[in-house]
Image (cartoon, rainbow, N blue to C red):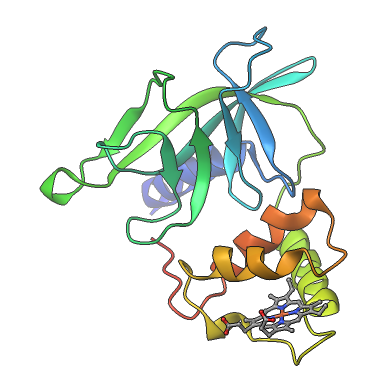
Length: 191
Ligand code: HEC
């Protein structure tokens, strides 16, 4: 009995020990700590692990799905265009493969990379409800509010972008709302 308890406890402690964080805005990514050149962007509401914390930058670990033919975008799942992070096409990134996908497609990967240090959050619930509030307050002024469930995860970015210029939504909040809409879309899949 004791042994069972301990073997249950140890992985739980490791889970707790991981420093998981979220950002409510887009975060610039760099290959090396002292680089000035931005090589990618991490999008809001996606979990990442903070591995090192150094002055203005943090080393983070991002997980997601990668199409080996176009290895410049990490996606949230293996079937929808919900972006976790996007990179310049000519940058060579050092992905670690977690699980190989079927038919040579959509490998599950992780990537360690440097990021600007921001006011990160321990969970994403508050930022998602802020996104819902921004969406409800700005998108139901001229017509009834369209439901999150009206569109697919793949359709939302272009629907949103075609309308956002008619609203007073801040540029820095746009990706937060897009990710919120995609993750509440009618066909959203968690993996
Ligand atoms: C200033 C007024 C205004 C605001 C604010 C506005 N819309 Fe619209 N929306 C319109 C009008 C007018 C149409 C009719 C089609 C057109 O003009 O493109 C429309 C059409 C739509 C449609 C139907 C288009 C389709 O393809 O079915 C959707 C969905 C939509 N809006 C979503 C939104 C969202 C999401 C927001 C917030 C980001 C928003 N709207 C904010 C004026 C507005």
